[in-house]
Image (cartoon, rainbow, N blue to C red; front, side, top):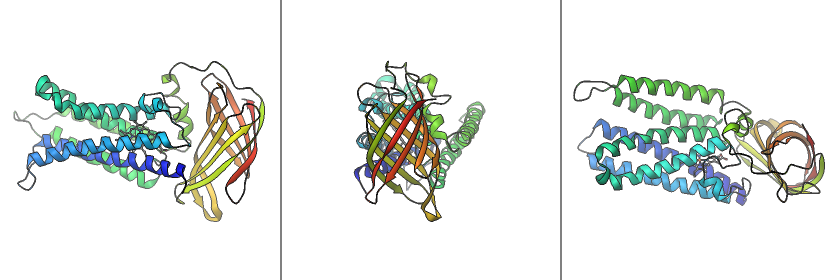
Length: 347
Ligand code: HEM
């Protein structure tokens, strides 16, 4: 296993652990508000575990950010990890993770200032925990490479089911005056249906990467283009680099990490994700192509649209408006060395 694989596994594992800890924290928070307690589990213990799960979720979020930063394939800059919507990869969905991380830190820190702001304001602020939780669910599904794996589906569905069941118990139990919170319960129910509808029509569908990177719903929220120049089109370059195959048969990722000689220079990464079938055949259900020209040329991001033996056809777009078709021909030797060519033309 090489460095890029370690970083990729670490980023996904730490994200999922942070999510499990956040689920624990949110569930314990609702249990605390339900005032369920036993002699074996007095309130201060539940409270301490609730706070500990939150801080641990933040620690794993930090690992998650560091793992993404050191991943040589994704090449995230510190600003992309720290600033919502700044990421070159699935900007909106990654941005929700960044926002949730800040919100989680603020919720944790709010207990330090509770005595100055008063319990009522602290409590109102604390309701934002649901926004942070929802943002993380959407972030994980929208930006994770495992969202379409069956095991990942059970993790997300199990967590949402637990939180929704506890929330229903909380909102539909009578308060001291015997009132039940039907209106918030209805809003939560509608939210749950919308979340399910979005998940099944978006991240759980093949080709989500294309949508998540440019399509409807993300493009309009991107900051104004900062790159003025455009790609020199058409171009023809030779490429060389490394190839690696990682993951299990159920979730395989093939990665081509190459540098280009001749215009536009720079580097090109291709990642194919899918299932390995008999005969080592990969059924691709998601892909990413990132072409980074040398100098100040604009980054072109997209996905593979067609694969035939050693030829891949991809489409990518730059923030300065270039729509590019790439024809990539690769040969891989037994040691994982890649050579080949890439032709770029305007779409
Ligand atoms: C600094 C803020 C964050 C950034 C920049 C960030 C970025 C990312 C990126 C780029 C991915 C895709 C990784 C891949 O599968 O290749 C991802 C996935 C994920 N993130 Fe985050 N994230 C952040 C915060 C969080 C937080 C706060 C949580 C949970 C508490 C979280 C949970 C997850 C989960 C569950 C996945 C899916 C992992 C998988 O599919 O295996 N992230 N994140």
